[in-house]
Length: 333
Ligand SMILES: NC(=O)c1ccc[n+]([C@@H]2O[C@H](COP(=O)([O-])OP(=O)(O)OC[C@H]3O[C@@H](n4cnc5c(N)ncnc54)[C@H](OP(=O)(O)O)[C@@H]3O)[C@@H](O)[C@H]2O)c1
Image (cartoon, rainbow, N blue to C red):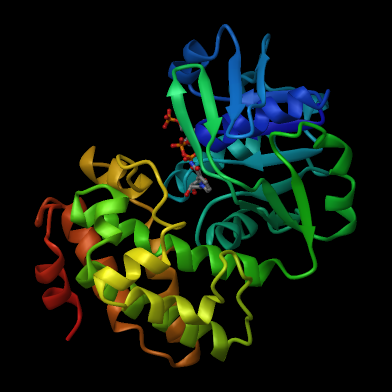
């Protein structure tokens, strides 16, 4: 088996289908509920009108896995919060030569996996696109972007596996800068979740954006101290994003028309998690900035306060739906 997708949710499902469409052999590690969902195959579409279907997926039973089936590449696509519980099953399917590729958001997932697999090559990747479920067996890539990986001999061997135009592979000399730039964008996830309103509405309110700008300032300070140059993912250089966020509403709405051209009902995935009482990935997002800052002596009080607040909501001690003014008063001293 060449590829194995471990955890076929939004990104794992889309990736597995893209690899199959590229003519590669793919094993799917899924739980019974997902296996039932995918029993008749999976449709993948995107905003560029690609529309494909894969059928006869090969599901892998981790309990009766034979060593001669070990994959060359294992794509780890569970959420950060599911990593610990997945380790035992992972150990059953990873062979001595398997390369593990981690596609989680934020920082730290790959360090944890490398600790668990000290003798394996563990690679950090980025899923740059946004994937949403349009129906039980239908995943849709709603934005630009595909899989970003560091340029290494082992990742260069992956190029033939990405023939499906709906999921491009890009190899980078500097993945770190991209990772941190993506983290900067993801800093809005908890604010949107806490606001309990759609992204478009939340980003139109200056006090929410002031909190976001303060969190982004801390990220930029930590990144600069570590010598990381953030990649440019939007027309605006990453350094100027906090200043744009602080603009008055009337001006922000004008200069960010493109950014706000999003589905009026779209919300962050952390909102999905908090509103369905699930544990979030906050420790790998804002929490990771706090930890990185502590390592080099840079305090990050805003990211710490956001992390603490999300944990309080997870524990049921506070609720989502905090308005912009109240959130600013709570988090910005
Ligand atoms: N969605 C996006 O557009 C996007 C974009 C970029 C990055 N990301 C990042 O990618 C990661 C995955 O996100 P996602 O949106 O794809 O999450 P998701 O839809 O929740 O998918 C995760 C999948 O992993 C499965 N899983 C968890 N533990 C498992 C185990 N031990 N064995 C088998 N399957 C297991 C889950 O199954 P159950 O449902 O049974 O728990 C679920 O199907 C996150 O770190 C996220 O931040 C997502």
